[in-house]
Amino acid sequence: MAELSRRHLVVSGLAGAGASLMPGSIREANAATSIRYNLASPNGQVMLKKYAQAVKLMMALPPKDPLSWTFQWYTHAVPTNTTKAAALTQIFGPNPSPNKTLATEMWNTCQGHFAASGEPYFCPWHRMYVCYFEEIIRAVLKDPKFTLPYWNYTVPAGYAVPKEFRLPNDPLWGPLYRPNRNPTSNAGQPIFAAGGSASDMSPAPAMAETQYLPSGAIQGFNQTLDFGLHGNVHVFTGNSQGMGQIPWAANDPIFWMHHCNIDRIWASWNNAGHANPNTAAWQGKVFIFAGPDGKGVKAIVKDYTNTKKCDYQYDQLIGTKLVASVAESLAPAAAAAPVTVAKTQSGPVALGAAPVRVSLQAAASPSAAASPLSARLSALPENHRVYLVINDFKADAQPETLFRVYLDLPDNPPSDPVNSHYVGSFNFFAAVAHGDDHDHADVARSISFDITDIAANLDARGLLKAEHAVTIVPAKAPAADAKAVVGNISFVEQ
Image (cartoon, rainbow, N blue to C red; front, side):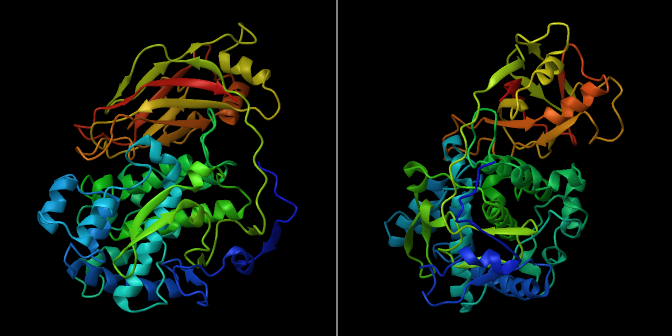
């Protein structure tokens, strides 16, 4: 874990969380810091009513208006039943216009979910996107005190899509309803009833990361959050023309509540003392959004590494001890070089409705008499960990399910899917090609799981095999046209 600077201030309570939150330039310089509330709280309910009114108004605006629902949705991604070029012509006609120029710059710019090169910007791009969307709602409602509430699905009380989003005929809440959700979601069941478990709703894996970007087999906070909890909620909530598919996701009003919570998790991770990247390339990246006046705004990443620019804080961050940074964090220590312990030797492995068992061939181990992982664990240096890495997974279409990963699962596995052999799960939300508008050459993604403690537990019980196998099991039958594959699997010490 990165050591904190001596000038970091450790405080308790919400007041401490506000110590690093100063008024920014999006709102007036003398404006009071605004608060984003849990939508289940009394204050959150007040804001949710305003949000429903704003969605109705934005949906009534012509799509060529930058404040309209369609314009904002297409900023994330244009839907798969059209292309960006076709949508521009359909909405704006053949002639140039300021709004058409802005749409050309803005639409299809979601970071992290098309070309893999955009993955490092997943957190800041979505913070910018939500921030300017919030400003637009203030303009539409003529209410400068409005704040977007967040959906806290990481606790049991929030496992279901909130009831306000499931009332299609209600005069107030109707605009928040979308039919393109999984039936269990619109029925008010926990969203993981569509093929998952409560463990898939936890922010703990992301919060446990100590650096933002990947380093070898260490996945980092940004990628762990994106490929894990973030994608899980999308896949659990919506179908392939809703939250479950990137080009359609931002058409669902629950999208914005989801991404408020994702942003809250990032704020919580920073608040715990973890540092964001400080390279000029990362901090200097610029994206274009529509401001509340409908004109284009250039947003630079370095201004959105905290919530000062947008002048907000959350009513509650994750964790009981709040750490407010008043100085730069020290850079994290350099990670050890990764060493491959074992890996698959064949090519891509197809995933379908049946479990797939993949054997791994060991590299040189400290003791040939022991299983590769057992030998590696017995000689593991201090501060080193062992990871299971799944490389180059991708699909032709959304499988609409998670895939669970197990280490040395017996032929007759336990009835509980989250058992002692369970490593974790992954989804294909960000690993699917979407139409002709995007660079799909690097759509394949990789994910890693820290298996040190899991393997040690199995080893202590004599359950590690001499020849290791990784079993991948779909939580439910994947979509027939998904054609999901994984490139290779390896154990890596780092």
